[in-house]
Image (cartoon, rainbow, N blue to C red; front, side, top):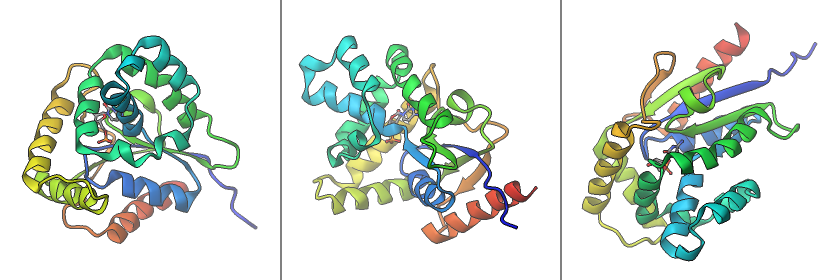
Length: 218
Ligand code: C5P
């Protein structure tokens, strides 16, 4: 007899470039979950602020989030260091967080029927967006390793930036994300810590898969 598929919600929080996105994507594919990289929504708003200044107002942003779909978030322009840094600044604004909230909740709790659940990664997912997630992870890695990974990613995208600049902006971004008053990045007590510093992508996937399988079977 085939085992009934379990509806599953997975929440992941992590600092930048710790590997959470890679893990979340592979896990979502394996278990057929809707995956949302919530940082991309803040990046989209930051992009509008930098490059479409006139549209950076409450009404436009409200409409944008209301009609947002996952394809809108796949633009490689959103990946630059400049957009990431601006995203961590606008993400401190409680009105912007409120705007983004509804879209995240929709993805987390109401994914299209073809999925067996949802997996979201970000900074406040484990305690604000999906406090009742079936499994919570805090994914991290050493700062220099994260900066190196991000630098290599940006190089592949032909973005002209030095390793030192990436390291500096990542340090700044960590400071912003961990210390802000609203929705700071933190590891909740019920999150499982995954340090990816010395793990390959495959090893990360297998480690998390084992934890999820144990949970599903329990
Ligand atoms: O994950 P990523 O690096 O793309 O996120 C960009 C910025 O968006 C983060 O530095 C953080 O300040 C903000 N963010 C957030 N809450 C989330 C996801 C991202 O504040 N859930």
